[in-house]
Length: 257
Ligand SMILES: Nc1ncnc2c1ncn2[C@@H]1O[C@H](COP(=O)(O)OP(=O)(O)OP(=O)(O)O)[C@@H](O)[C@H]1O
Image (cartoon, rainbow, N blue to C red; front, top):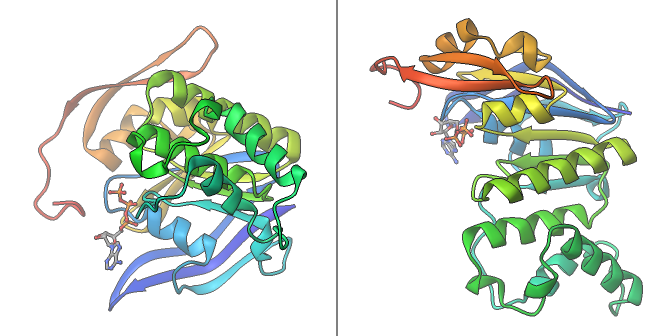
């Protein structure tokens, strides 16, 4: 099973924001998407998820992605209702919920909450949670869909270090065990090196480099992409650790300037 995108192009007005001739991600693989602010990462993920208009073709095994096969977690999951954590997570099964919630639905929701350490919050209104807790709740909602394709936009941006590890470990375990195609937008280069099988570097909406993290996350590529000097170390498990040393001066015409 593989996810393919061919000639994917997204325009905001007249501006070509994402232009990707060819991108493939395989089953059991985690593809991380990296790039500076404004380089088009979220737009690419939205186009893959089909939530914004895009030219080109996105397919799972050669056919359009069935909606039930897709688990997409956007960067912002608000606005927040008065629904409880359990209710929000159950909404992830909306496509399968019948006229009533079955014991299976409840068991699946509780298992997803338990997996992310959220069971104690089950009856709390989601609007009263911290940003990190809400991020975990919406991840649980995405996972309970049991999708074949997992598209996660900065899923750990609000999380403390323990929860970052828990979430990325969980996502990796599920990806491997269930043969999911997982695409994650991240800003954390070290996390991308540790949890990604391949890394795609986006530059001004184009796929600038793609490959195993050890090949694409080099001081030279990071200097060109982000305008930073870095040192790349290796941790005791053999993963790269990217240490930012200093930033070069931003150019006036950089995408985020
Ligand atoms: N709805 C929109 N309408 C018009 N332009 C948009 C819209 N959303 C994003 N853009 C622009 O498209 C470009 C890419 O935005 P996108 O959010 O995809 O970048 P990103 O790489 O995810 O950035 P970040 O790292 O800051 O989240 C930016 O220049 C942004 O200003």
